[in-house]
Length: 121
Image (cartoon, rainbow, N blue to C red):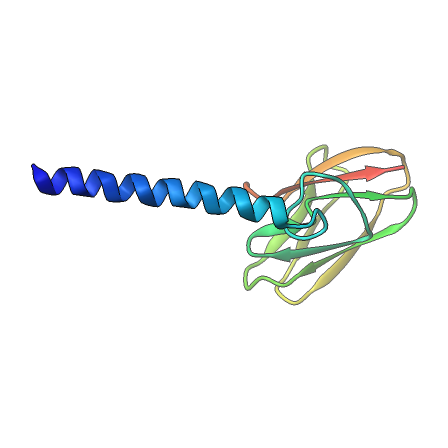
């Protein structure tokens, strides 16, 4: 019984420490690094660690957007509405152009948790 109590205490401390660390990390990280929820004005997206980085970008209508796969796995850049769908092999860069203003959500059709948004102005 005493061992179970110690295990619970250790797990609680570990979980609490993780959330404290996570909170401090997110306060010191810049919005332009990692997968940011804010929209970044750039024309390049890196695919790394099973995510699009940055996940949200803003571009001007008609500009080219580059997606570079720096993962060891195949991915796709697939618009939720079907506007584009391109495979991206490891080490490959693909480019897409969106002429119409609007908000375009996209994902990797192979890895459903990978998602992003392109805002075209």
